[in-house]
Length: 216
Image (cartoon, rainbow, N blue to C red):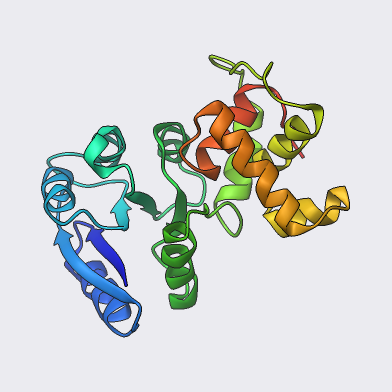
């Protein structure tokens, strides 16, 4: 079972997500919150696998709640998916830097929301449809800040890291480099370990900061 917490200040949104999650045999809604401070308390109490966290909430905003959750060593297995109304929102950039594992739009199709939960729970990151590819592209246009040290990476690992930064999946990386998906997965995992990246989303941020991603 994938344990999920939903944090959103709109009762109708929480209701819709509750009904959607309760309809799936492999998902278990273990908590809800209407503001960021309450979200932190619920997450600490329930220790879910995935948190659907609204970016804009009262009392404490979603970004502040995200930083607290990501920074809590007791929640190192918890992944956060940010829920946003806007496809390109300034807050999304900060969410990527702060450790969000993916993004979904509030008006996304139910199947896309369910996919987001399952993909992130499996240790991947939601780095493709709708929001994130454009976010990464815009991210690449910004000056690099605190560029990571890539001296411990091989040339192939740098190449793979750059493709992760462009939002490519393991299968897409495999096709681009003419290697097997398993080999692509191994390269990504090794780069994450070497750089101490929490997940693919953070690795994509590091790739951008290292200058491995150019605007399309």
